[in-house]
Picture 1 (cartoon, rainbow, N blue to C red):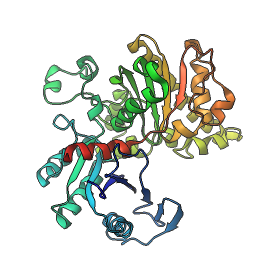
Picture 2 (picture 1 turned 135 degrees about the vertical axis):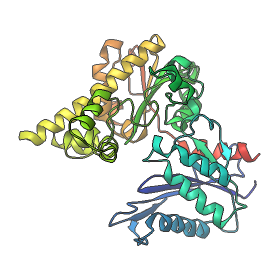
Picture 3 (picture 1 turned 60 degrees about the vertical axis):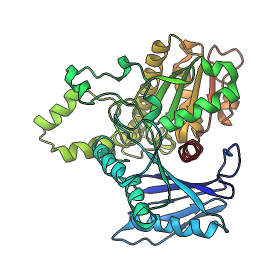
Picture 4 (picture 1 turned 90 degrees about the vertical axis):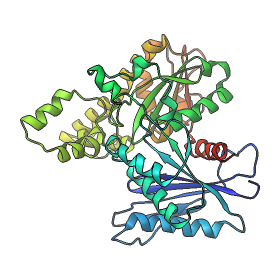
Length: 397
């Protein structure tokens, strides 16, 4: 594939991230030759940002803003080719269900099949399918590859997959799938390079972004994770609840008469940090109001305390599954950049022998624990794009 490029697309509901990797280099470089994103799709002020250029306002067709954003990216990519060609486009797909647990070349039949998993990941699943369909229509001979966020957890022990429902539910495919698998798969490459043999021991990776989960790893494989059947389970997130007593949902439906559509809106868009704080889904914004007086300050403090408590609780549970902990890794937007979240989590995990180096933590250093800490604590930037580009090369040979 000398001289050719791989285009990586990560399509969300209101943003599309993209990156170009040089397929001619062996091994494939970790950094793309160019990356960018369109964000605010469907909103009043969408913008476009790219490597070396600050984001700037763009006009998108108000009737079909998502299609317009995809076409804008196509135009910008064509301008960057400089005589080279796109060898493949690779997409992040959140849910692969029971059938898809390895990267696969896309056909229209596969796109149609993947639509069946939209109810399991309504915030994420529809949008890469839209991009795939558009490209199949425009350039049917252009190879497209799908990579699945559930795939890394496919080998989980059965006891971690089964839901405590009647066994017939398991036979119908109701099970714990796990998510953020592309991020955790990248960690299985990056952590041994940086930390050596300890990375093959008892490891917990905390992927803390707008969505959040933990993965307990042993020998670089997933042995437990906090997200389950859907991307609602586990940790408290920016706008999602995380684990929730199903009795609360029964109450909302039976007593408060909330219809199913409103329940979905509540669980996915109005809960988590945003719902408790009433301020923002982002910890870095909420922390600015901790010292406010009155209800605003109280809710800010409560939201952050609950957020940290849920992380600590799940790290404790995952440590129990592993039988101890050797390495704790923070990654994704919050994990990589929010020193105060890391400090509060590690403070409450001091019983494990964790000792934090305050200066290293403040600087987002690769290792933020002290030399005498019984558990090494690390910050490792994730790189799902590189994993996806590598998978595209593997699939296309």
